[in-house]
Image (cartoon, rainbow, N blue to C red; front, side, top):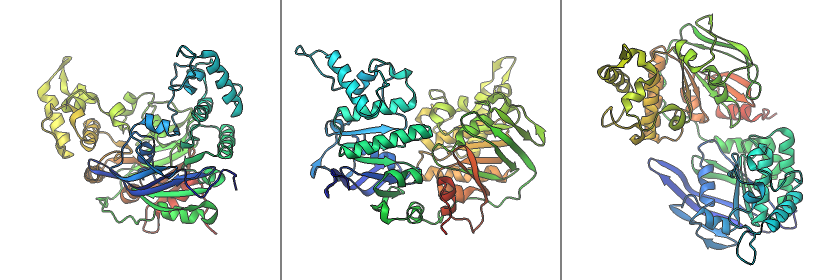
Length: 506
């Protein structure tokens, strides 16, 4: 037992509830972190983990519940307040400043001062050097620009920052997602150092091998609720998997039974130097093919390569039996492949433009004549496809930025349907949208398949994958781990085990 470990938690959350319009992100959840111990926070994407982290770091204020630090009720009213109470977070995308030096990042907001209240640069560099040496990173120069460091070294700077403010509570949110095996080993040594120094650590990861190696305790979230907690040594992986997926897929998904047609798409030996390897699958007319996996599995990267956003290093794509060379998104659209990205705000929709112009953007050849746009034709095309998707908007010249997330998603889908594709790729199609809009998205997805379109759906939500897919491909660490027919015999545990690399219990 670590000498810093006590029976009293360093921080405890009780009855925390947080609701957004149409979405209950957290409902009466509890969490306790103990000095000298690592607590793993486990749950599917969308379980409420990120909302909890933002509540603990002062970004969100809970609607209900209380937070205690060292036994005292505390209001974490801002990130600065959380920072002063010794709470720091190290994210997958470490929130530091590229243009500042390593020392400036470490001491940002609490730099040592001279007698004249100016920054004591000599002291700051000296203390930064000491901290970096303490965490086994003497190779990082305090004067170096952060932008010149690797991702792993940026993580080390974030850890040094945590030590510099003498943070007692360290949150690590998917810290290994972008690290190599060697860098992960180095990070685990750092976590052991933090434990020896009595830090209370929250470790968020989808990787069971990491959780069982580094964590002492666990807390499981499901659908915004805390469904289990305890000591990892007393709990099997099977028990935790059951807690994660403990609901049956009893939600109503409007998946229509469609007679599948001929093969539309075949991918063979698809590889990328850093993202995925040896990918092969086929897709038939009217089929919804689900791609499931955890963060970092390579699913979105594969879809972007199929759409020509990135270039594979080798492999072949056949559409309708013919080899298709796809060097750009324009090539993909010409061959009948379209892609609705996960981040519709940045990659899918053009905020600031009206609905009708968003819909007609890829179809300008249909709505123009002699290089002049025909607005009546634009409205006609936009109306045809937005009506098919039951878009809820005041008018077609309404700014897309004013729509709800679900209706923005419908506009992005309408935009690509107007090109009359053969294959549509939907990447996390219901991410960040309310429950009612999710049902509408599922309904038009089923409608697309029934009309003969071939659909690839990337999703991290088990009910969605199991409720909407005819067949499911599970990816893990850039490779296909399993390909499964979605029959009554298939259950969520099988998918989670495949995605996590957990062997079937003997």
